[in-house]
Length: 252
Image (cartoon, rainbow, N blue to C red; front, side, top):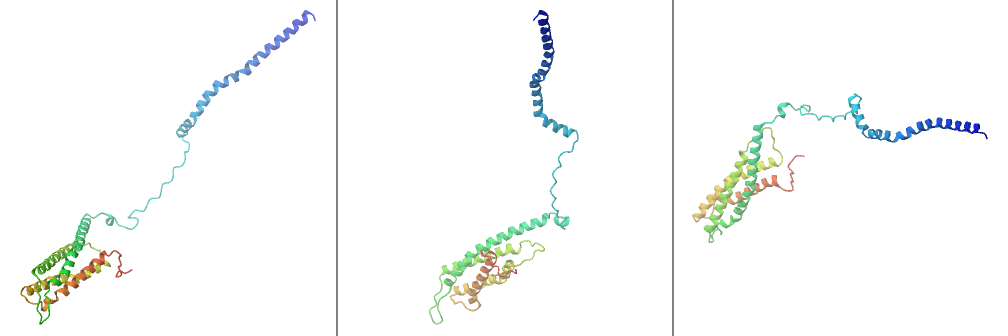
């Protein structure tokens, strides 16, 4: 192999290498730049949803539809009540409060009255003179008479105080009484006159006893009237306060 041939081969190899070097550098450039170029893209990709939301709001694009509102409830005017009917009435409310307060006192005093009334019925026989015609009359002691009279006076005072709070409680217009209340008030026409008549007959009987006489005449009905009065009074309490609430007189 001569020198000229070797020189030609080296020249061709040099030319070929010179042509391959630019191609290799261009092929390696995207690979070398891919790593730093991807990090900004990735960092921007994390914040992209918020940016897109801002852009979508500012660009006027249609957003999600708002939830539908719940239907409004009908007003009292829609139900047929006038404005005058729905307005508050301070005077009527004050009257109702006063009536409620007085009836509560009436109820409490009525229950308290039961105690001296029952005690008066128990001491009643001890205040009577014992004995029949032709026999020696055993007069009651002064202690029994005084105790019975004191219990009777206490019962009458509590009873009429109780009645006061019921009779003078403000009346509410348009309110109809029925059922237990009607029975309660109907029984008052029995125990009311009885509570007036019982002390009168008791005073007459007491005077007869003090004079050493046996109770006679209309005064002798004192015990019977007192018993009927107590029964009617107890029934009026049961009518409105019985725990079982057997209101058999109410219309169903």
